[in-house]
Image (cartoon, rainbow, N blue to C red; front, side):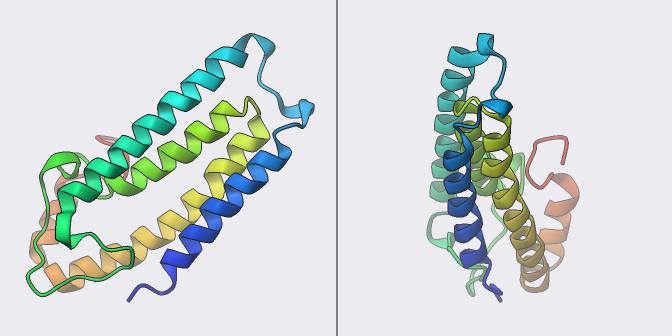
Length: 156
């Protein structure tokens, strides 16, 4: 069911962060000098926010949390905690962490490498995961989909 998405996510996120670190010294892509302190500390805050969201999401799912795409026999649609607002808050947390890292490097190119590969891999995983959830949880999950956004509350 997982179709290798766990590995794609790992490779995309670690690879993106690694490349972002390598290119962060390229002065051609620096943010304006006046943003230096602001971008670094804003990035750190966004990382902490993303980490907190991820932890909250995982603890809310409890025993239903998996690192692969799968369900268990007594699986229910979770609609509490961060799942009230978005269907994949754990992934939102990961994206925030990557964005925060890119922001803290003070470099546009690093920001792109920190976010884009992981985002692409997570969007693929969401596609696979939602198909599995619809096929196993049926109309309960479809109703939940119609009331919540994927990653960004009230937007998408």
